Length: 287
Image 1 (cartoon, one colour):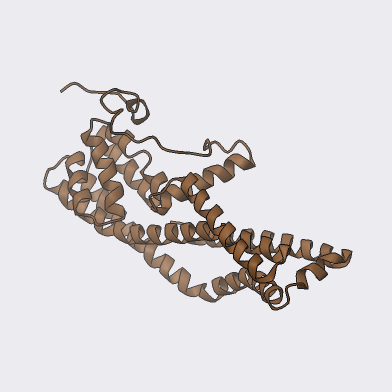
Image 2 (image 1 turned 45 degrees about the horizontal axis):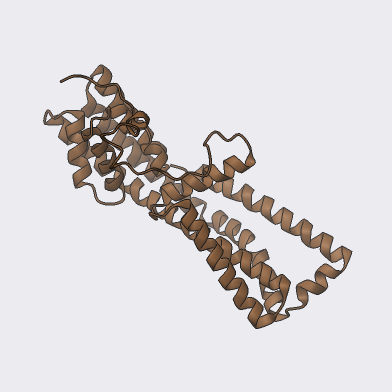
């Protein structure tokens, strides 16, 4: 069998693959050239890793619909432009929050599936199967959502794409650093050989120990995380309570320079604190 050096990106332009490969819709370039490109790239990654199965433009359309619906409902009830704008902003952000929660749940589910998958992959390799055959067998036996991603990579291998290129974007599609270790292990083993069974078993034990450590860390920092979430949610909740209790509250507050400056400063500090807290939580729980 002749060897091929065609990569995944170049195979998309081949006539044999042009009818079955779907073009991916992206807003960002992934290079992070400016703040706008970083936001667009983050949004692309969110849609890819959430597993919702919709395009970024479709989610933006849903955000627009929910924002207009909630804002219009509040305007009909209160007939106040400030509360209408606040409700429209909340409605616009709701689908994005749903996507963030879906991504977090999907990543947690895949993280729990990784150790059994690695053990099964080691058992398949111990029987004398090649890396490609072992990967195909494990992908067929692994349930959703990790199994779906493995089947996609295995299907690319069956299409003639080299294993290295077929596994290249698996960590990016899932957002899990652990899978980058798996991809590196399989790629190096295919190129240089070695005892892949021992490596996979050690990697499985390492992942299990890491999950155990993270479970203990979450239990130890539960109170701190609850306090952080409360600090993020409480100020907008208090403002929403007073606004819906008295529709003219925000108008009267913004009519004076003291109230307007204080409100703008409080909003800026709350946003900075929320970003800071989310970064701390992300760095402590990232897998």
